[in-house]
Image (cartoon, rainbow, N blue to C red; front, side):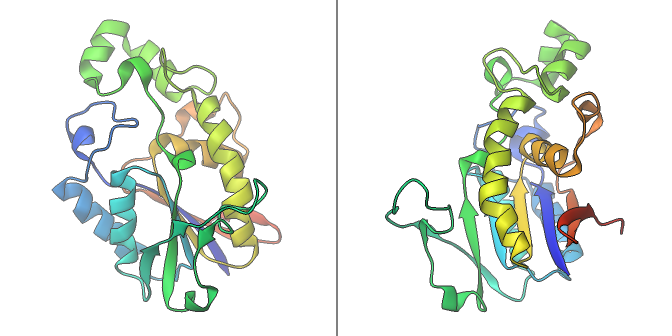
Length: 228
């Protein structure tokens, strides 16, 4: 059985402060570390072959904590000299294949970053709701087409996250490799919408708490959410 696992990062400092974190780099809190380790224990039964994460520290810290409970250590791999634009993400990285049985390669890419929140970035959620109203904040943060002023909509995030998933991540799953993606609320919502074919009208109801994991099995040419 081949697995794809999506994990939202643990609680970060700006989450605790109830701010819109977006592209701001903010580390995990003590609770975030504890939740990531709990998630690691929950996922210890899956032996991961590859890992993908964003360029933001809260996702990377969460991933390292999860991989700490694996039989193999995770190692960040670094980009080698590209051989043309057509080269895949994994081909552009320097990593000896013979070590795959001993370590888990970690690939980091900004395509998996959180939403850029524009006007809202770094601001207190309560103050923004008082200024613009709960309904408008909900539309900016949860709808597909509309994003906050100067920021990204979920459609914009999908335009970067989904092609990266299709080109770089899904082929590894089809090769029979167990893959974990540790990222953010909105980059993961974009992937969930794509994987589960969720409509634009229904996606606002989809949300992930911090340190939440979703497990998909790759079966008969498609990804199926694990009910357990």
